[in-house]
Length: 354
Ligand code: COI
Image 1: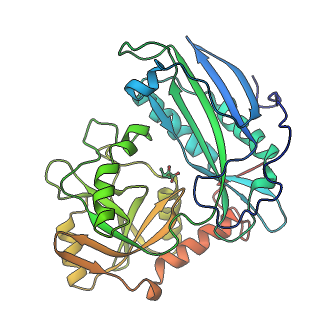
Image 2: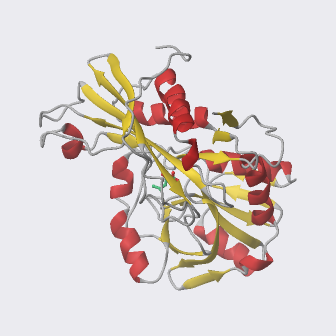
Image 3: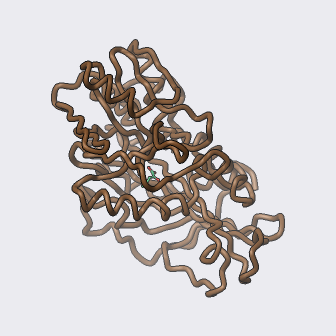
């Protein structure tokens, strides 16, 4: 297949869009009319097609359900005021998808299937991109092992799919975050840097316990000492310490190399902040808070975009923030949104036209 080749489309009988408003739909609950599909078997990709969104029929022995070879991505498409559709940093998510695939012993998805497939799918579904502030069309590419056998080994067969879901803000209000020190998300040598389905499955117990205590998410700490912060359940984390933006580095392979994370760091640098990617201990954060130096804390992620944190709790030490008085995060979010919604020049070539 080449980048110019048209992917075959099976037409849907009718559109689910009729009679639907795209405002404030809860995240991930409504799906568009079509999905992209491709199959891998023993070294070859085939069956690349776009067809009506529908349930899959799977054999109960299908390998992914037993041993968790499953990865995914989160990407967003936006519409500008003139109605032009764009996808944000599609190639960066494509690269990360295949980094996850390699770690999970899964085949790489070719660029023309991933990038061109998504472009053609969004082109078909452009009417589903909401043109409201903080709204977008969430793109969920995923792949799972599809051998029908329960032996523990990498599959010969895999299925790649892309589904789309119109979405508004993921976190409507500033978050309360609980610093986790009992359960762990990732260790050096593990799969923390991969967007593997199991990373999210393994996070749910700790998140549930934090939610019972009134928190929205946990901030993970390192597995050895529970001393260094890693990432939040669905986001990377950035701290504004004085005039520096400080965020955990990628060195240990224990956090996700977030596309929104890198975009926000680029924007913060453009705003004149010094950027530090390095280990950050919870002790350093508490000391900075006491000294009045910890000004802002926020999460970055595709679904979450840039989300303020109004409370960070470690043991009995509670750090609270007056989000309404913040200067840095709101400006960074505005500059990022201006690019995404076509209100300013795409000066970093982040947008892929549909
Ligand atoms: C994303 O931000 O795209 C994510 O995948 C996080 C979450 C929705 C699982």
